[in-house]
Structures are given as C-alpha cells and as structure tokens.
Length: 407
Image (cartoon, rainbow, N blue to C red; front, side, top):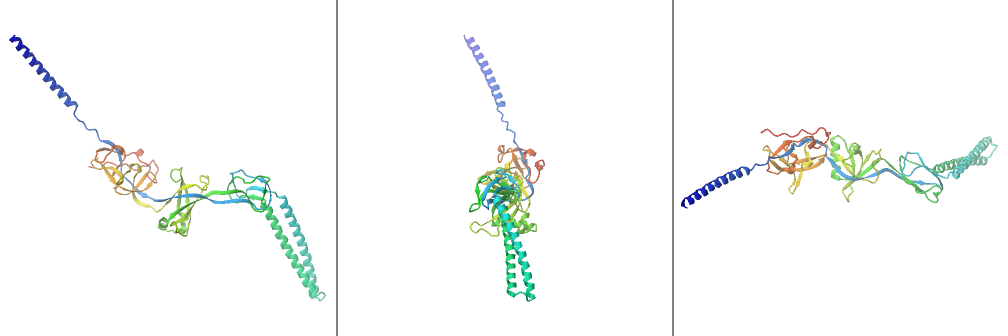
C-alpha cells in the first residue's frame, strides 16, 4: 500500500511538471502573436503654392437690354391688306412687314400731281402777264396799278405751285406710310392685328414690336470706390474714363460656367445716385448667335490692373474652421501642420492667398481626410490629375509639383 501511494505521488508530480511546461509554451506563443506593429503613415499628395501674376476682377450682377426696341404703328387709316413676316422672325432693315390699303393714297397722290400741274400752268401764265405789263409800264402804255396787279397774280401763282408741291410731298409720305418696314435688323414680335382690320382710325394703331438683339446692352451698377479702381487701372495704361471702350467686360448666364461672353464698357453715368451711392454702367456685347436676350439676369466681371507674384493654392485644398480658412502642410519631418490663411478671389480652380503661407510650403491637395495636424504622413508629389489648370494656362501644362525639401 505504501509503495502504491508513493508511485501515485510520483505520477502526479510528473503530470504537474508537464502541465507547467505546456502553460509556459502557450504563454510564450501568445506574447509573440500580440506584438503591436504601428500602421504605415497615410499617403497624401502635396504641391507648392503657385506663384504668378494675376488680373483681379470686380464682380457684379446686371441685366441685359435691347439696344433698340420700338413699336411698329399704323400712321395712316386703312384696312390691313398683308402681313409679310412670321411671328418671332429675324428680319433685315427695310424688309416690308405690313401693308395697309393703298388705293386711296394712290388716288390722293395722283390728285396732288394734277394740282401741281395746274398750279405750274397758272404760274407760267401769271409770269407772262407780269412781263408784258412791266414792259408796257416802262413805255408808259400801262398804269402802275396794272403792273402791281400782275405782280400780285404772279406771286399768288408761285405760292400756288409751292403749295401744290407740298401737297404732293404729303401725298407721297402718306402713301409711304401704307408700307410698314423694319427700321433696323431685329426680331419682330407676334402681330397684334389681323388682315382685314381697320387700323390707324383716329389714332396710331400698334401692329407689333421689333427688338434689336445684336449687339446687346448689359446694365449694372457699381460703387464709387469701384469706379475709382477702374479709373486707376486705366491710368496705369495711360488712359482716362473717356477711353472706357478699352475696358473689357465678361458676362455669364446663371446656367453657364465662367464668363463666356466678352464685350466692352460703353457708358458710365456722369453722376452718383445720392440715394444708393452707385453709378449706372453699361457694357456693349456682340450677340450674333442670339445667346443673350433682353431682360436676362447675368453675372458681370470687369478685370482691373495686374498684380504680380501672387500665391495661389487649389481651392479644394482649403478648409474652413472657426478660426478662418486654413490649409494643411507637411514640414521637413513629414508631419502635418495646420496654417490659418487669408484668402482672396477665386482664379479658375485656384484661390488667392494673401497671407499665412510661404512659397516653399508643401500643401496637401489630396488625401486631406487622412491627414491630421501632428500626424506623420507619406507625402507624394502631386501629378497633373491632382491639380486644376493654372489661371491663364492650358490644362495640359500644370505647375511643377512640390518635392520634399533636402534634409
């Protein structure tokens, strides 16, 4: 019994040793599997600020207006006999649009011609009688009274001819009024009367309207300070406000990207409106394709004088926070830093940076969501697909990407 007890004790000690050895091996294996491996730095793309000369622009809103717009009216009475255009058609200057009954006015013209012929015959007769009486008077064969009477008859005959000529001219004018033609190139509205209607009875009758849309006006208002900036830009080129025709103006519709329509300043009001402190300004634009029509709400851009060596960064790289606008940059240790900047106008896909950024800074342009201030990143130079086209250059010529500074 005692021998069996000792054997069982040895067996328990052996199994306990084996269990302890297994536990050590298991713990050793767990320590190797749980070793922490930090993730690699986030990959971002960076680019140096673009530095170049730009032309800032003043932005306004305005409205288009027709350069000419008139009502076509019947100035003589008669029945409308023809409408020679299609509603909304583009017509040329001199094209006949309406025709009013002409027979009455042709008859009046013929009567005026006959009256003139009669008056001219009387004039010839009166002139002959006066010459005869004047000759006899010089020879004392006719009294002065007869000479004076012949002179008076001649004067009346001359006046009769002049009156007949005026009546003939009026008859010609009235006959011309029976034809209503286009006073300029333009688009004619729908007709307001139909063939067979009596027009011009008692007062002029509006038949339609015609609007000239090429060229076209754009009206907008500017402040006194903005006019002074335009004047300053002209002065830089040796010009004055009398040379406003040299100032370009760019127009964009609400549905268009940018400002595809170009024109020139045409007029600046000579006085400031005291109630608003603004001046009315007008631009003149070519509109051969009729892309613009009167009454449209448009965006207006007027360039000012160039500004050299301006820093520009892609607008997509700029964030907004409570402190203001900012960009994320990468320092020499590849650590992300946040820089508060002061921004200016938008130039294409770039934003002007007035302060807070240096030309040598590496600005994060993509991968911003993976970058946090104080974190280390893996910066890569930005490629052409990462950057917008620089202002004034084609998209195929992006600025050179930033490279990592030498350690």
